[in-house]
Image 1 (tube, one colour):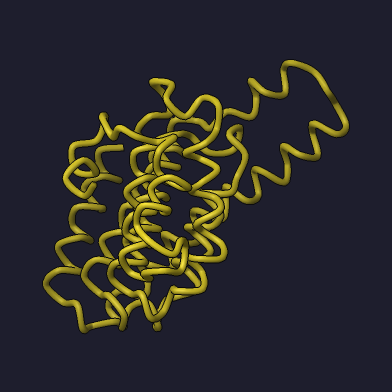
Image 2: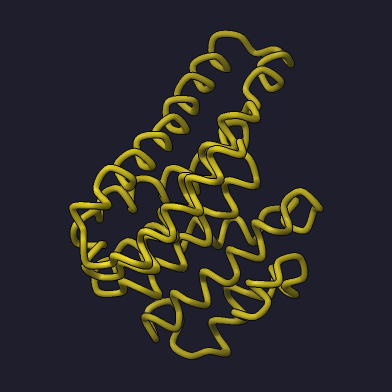
Length: 212
């Protein structure tokens, strides 16, 4: 795990120092995206297991192993850093990698993705709206917003294990609303009432508190 997180920090520095060198970043972004496809594969396998063998052991066996969780967490963090530094140019060069990774991590069932991973996926959604709005407008409004709203309104959204996910989903929705005024609601008051109230207050993530 230490090696994984060291790679993530190094990659962030490379993005920051060489934001225009898109060819230099291709391997890292592609690698990160490929690792996150495991989530989709796991979701499919779990669905098959549940249909064929409805026992309590299935849920236990489907939890995300620690090494997979760490890898997915770091890879999403790399994509967040890439979005921050490469912005629109990076979005047009690697757009499908960002879209697939974010959508997979947000939409997978709880048995296939941990709250830690889902939290960073929500943050990535906000980054995509903030740093590359022209590239991801339709994706953020049509695909991501319903998933973020679902995370905020789920019954266990304020549970200790889920509250960071909820906080990041709230922050991401605010970034989407700010990037595309009027697209989610006609005015800010309606937006707050319709989307944010169930997820407020933001309490567990200092970075997201500042954003809100």
